[in-house]
Length: 458
Ligand code: NDP
Image (cartoon, rainbow, N blue to C red; front, side, top):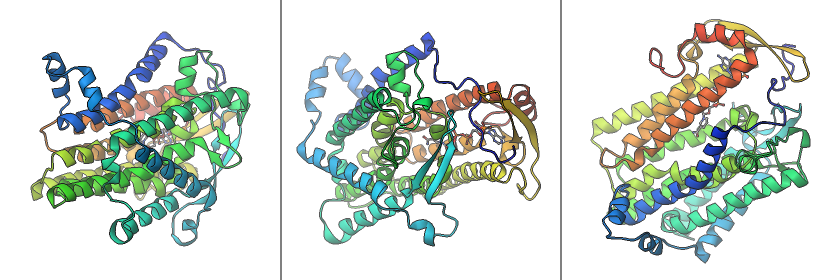
């Protein structure tokens, strides 16, 4: 059974009970997430990125909520056109241009790749061409910015709030469509998960891998593009705005562009590996992924660059170097930890980790149909330091982005706060799953590697 694909463990059937706490969380997130995004972007637009000033203004009676709303730019035809062109272009790059990068880039895995086995036992094929889409998009952007001047490189910043309405329309449309589709024409009915609770199903999704036709996969497309391809362009647009406003780009802005650029490129370089991560392997496609990828990610993951447009911070060389090192070390830990697990699982433990044969804990679990499977949990390398050291690296990188902005305002620190909550919750969620999957073997593993994120602390 060594290399046999392994379906999901018991408990991942297609009928789930929703407890009141999950339902309350879902209702809270559905209601407040769009407001949080609006509040952050509006605070920058109207209050120079202060999160307190709008509240103080309203409480002191200096402003009414309606004043703030009236000053908010509305949806414009220009923004709608930009957004439609953007999404259409990304869809075309995704479905019409087969990957050629893997033909000449050594070590890059692209082209047609298989995903993990779904709970119903299906193995989906994916066209991995995100790196190519990223390169083509950015090449066109630079040709425009420095040669043809079809549009200003500040175009994203200049239309940021009208574009927010477009992103929301797409986010809600795609989540609603995915919900309707799962009832009327699901891509794989056996992989649908119904709880009977409309709100929960809308948010967490019913279909596992909704598709249109053979290749248009909702999860892969919306997770990676248009949001993550846009991430680096959004940052460039902020840098261009700094140049326009102040005649120079600060070192903090360059750091944000470089560190987040590495993260984005890493994502596309490893897009095939991404098919095996929790998002694709365990999450269903609903509002959480659909709206989250369209709105939450491009708007809140890029807050540091936006902040630096309003508050251009010039860091001392020592601070800049320190932040760069923190970001690079974080990235190294994040990448190497993910790489070690990937190598370990691919070779079934027949590899070297830090120059030695890896140690591991043998474990077993029983699938829905009663078949027993065997697996291994590595306790060498970074996986022996903590059970989720990849998350720790990710958090170090996230902190580095925030530190570029100095300490005047809390807004740019939203990212590290959010990532800490997201990854801690993810860690607990994953461990809960692993514990019910592996039972006693998981206990042996947690005894061997007692800490989750920071050795000696948590
Ligand atoms: P992991 O890559 O950590 O995968 C967890 C799974 O790995 C477990 O469910 C288990 O699966 C297996 N596993 C756990 N321990 C071991 C071990 N010791 N040896 C071998 N296999 C083990 O989780 P994610 O998919 O969540 O994260 C992937 C990356 O994506 C992370 O680096 C994370 O930081 C990043 N990320 C970034 C986000 C962002 O918004 N920027 C959001 C989410 C993730 P099995 O059932 O196969 O045993």
